[in-house]
Amino acid sequence: MNRIIASIAALGLYCSAFCQAPTPLQVETQSFLTGLSKPVGIHHMGDDRLFIVEQHTAEIEIYNTAGTFIGQFLDLGGTVATGNEQGLLGLAFHPQYTINGKFYIHRNNTSGTSEIIEYTVLGDPLTSNVADASSAVIILSMSQPYTNHNGGCIAFGPDGYLYIGMGDGGSGGDPENSGQTGTSLLGKMLRIGVTGNGTYFVPLDNPFVGDAGVLDEIWAQGLRNPWKFSFDKSTGDMWIGDVGQNAWEEIDFQPASSTGGENWGWRCYEGFHTYNTGGCSGAGSYDDPVQEYSHGSPYNFCSITGGVVYRGNEFPAMQGHYIFTDYCAGQLYSLKDNGGGGFDQLTVNASGNFGYVAFGEDAYGEVYVADLGGQIYRLVDPCDDVTPTISVSGGDLVCTTGPSYYWYLDGNILAGANASSYTPTVAGQYSCVVDNGAGCAVESNVIDYAFLGGILGCTYSEATNYDSAASLDDGTCLFDFINDCPADLDDNGIVNTADLLFMLGAFGDICP
Image (cartoon, rainbow, N blue to C red):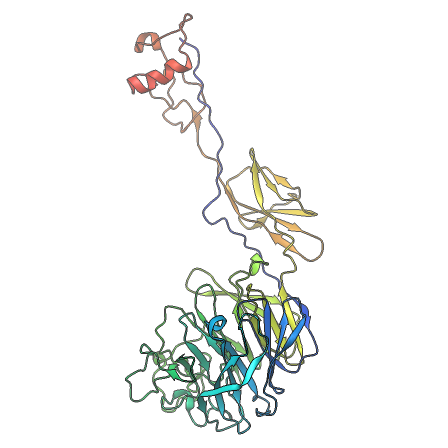
């Protein structure tokens, strides 16, 4: 017999395709501005400036992202109604503002009529901080039967068209049935094209163009008071926070692929629940919200404040979360696509704050929230400095440095595993949690660890000690090369590595 030819059996590990960081999100509010007068909008036009809309003084003021006051952009004081839900309510910059200097506001004039007005900036749009107050041109107006439920939010979509959220006209219970009346612009989401010369047009692909029973400007129906809506700057999806009547608040979601025409159900439905179904079609005729929130326990909502999807770079854990709140309850919640056709909800700040009325983004995707009492807060991730990751060293898993550690296997804590490294003894999904001792216990990425192989033994069928049950070769195979193979032996009659590799290629099943 010749000497044993060793085949080295190795332990293997790999990271699965879903190596993600399932970090539970926490969001804190960091004071940004104080002393404002009923701020209801936070906007940018692509640079470091933030334009703050104040409801009843009807002013638009400019600050930079460091919180420094730059100047007053526009003063419409004395030109707006100052009822509880009236005033200067919306602002949107033309997609080509840096070229044409055009922007649009939504206000209630002193008679309460809702107006969409086009303005032009004075001078160079890239540097000017003052609008031309004399440039105002009303492009669309809508009479209001009551003083509440005016909607107010306006925004340009990714398609370049201007979207206008209109409430049902007010009172309670939509006595005019505006939400379901196609010949009224109230209780709707409108979509128009603006020309930049004081006029608008109806996009030919609006869903009701050619339908004599529905006005051409209407994009979607069945809204009660879409106080705040927004577009996800990454996906183009639309999120609508629709204020409820007396029992349920709702969030409506329209994917970017939608061609419009949704009917969100009001006044037939409030959330998922029937409200007033007189004259309504069957339930299948309406589009459901993605979520509803009770006025009673456990949410105690009263007036939902639609939010924005975080797409900034400063806080990776917030990425992709739609963050929203309620005027009365004030906790911050998030919804995030779960990859299965739905959304997972988190309570990201449980402290609550009365009076949140608007979210906004700066040009960098960082998010702010305003309360009607005059403050604006910046949303931050307090655990952003704790970012544990797992690396592999030999057969060990090593977690990045932190004050204290906890290891998990398949979602279950491993008793006594509190060091920065861990040596797996069984296959499974491993993660570590680092606790910084200041309220942040953050989970790492997940490593899917496997032992590749099986029963040890000789796996070569040509060997004299072949083991048919073995699946992992242990290097014990013995071969009689003198009798069975035209081996090229060295002076001692022992097959060397080069000879073995040659024979493996040249003789296949005769030699190993």
